[in-house]
Amino acid sequence: MTEARVRKLVCLTGFMGTGKSTVARLLARQVGWPHVDLDKRITDATGLEILDIFAQMGEPEFRRIEHEQLVRVVGEAAELQQSRILSLGGGTTVQPHNLALLRENGAVLVWLECPIEVLLPRCAHITNRPLFRDEASFRELYQQRLPFYEASDYRVDSNTEPLRVVEQILALGIFPKVTA
Image (cartoon, rainbow, N blue to C red):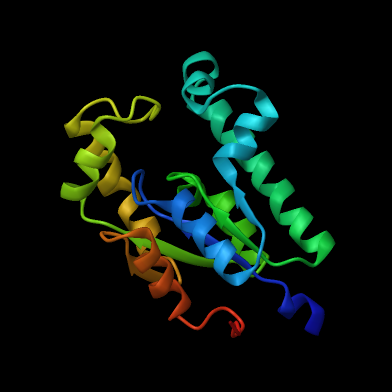
């Protein structure tokens, strides 16, 4: 039982543009844990970009693949008894079976919170966001997902430099103390 408590899965969640992948990479380097980017796992598994999966197969098939890859990542961490930093997709925790899987496996959810007025310009120039069609749909999707993000274990402000976000996460006390 104690071995299962040692293993930790720290998941960064939040809306598109909050910096989940960047912060997760930096955080993993800081604490010496492996980082897994769920979107990258999906593109590696399918050989397609996220935008192409949405265009060719639709969102329901993307969500099925996303869940399948999440199951694999969680299973690998459990099997290897290895702690990991996992950057989730913006809609991953909106899917009840994904959230249940993470909770059942003791994952810690950290919401990277950022005001929508900051996210809009961050995402406006990025063309590979399948669910960013226009400002109105962006705002609507943000509002739909907000309650799921708010249910996270922790909330940190990501409206700052990525290294500052990492410092905030480290200050939460969810990682073993790292000696420099």
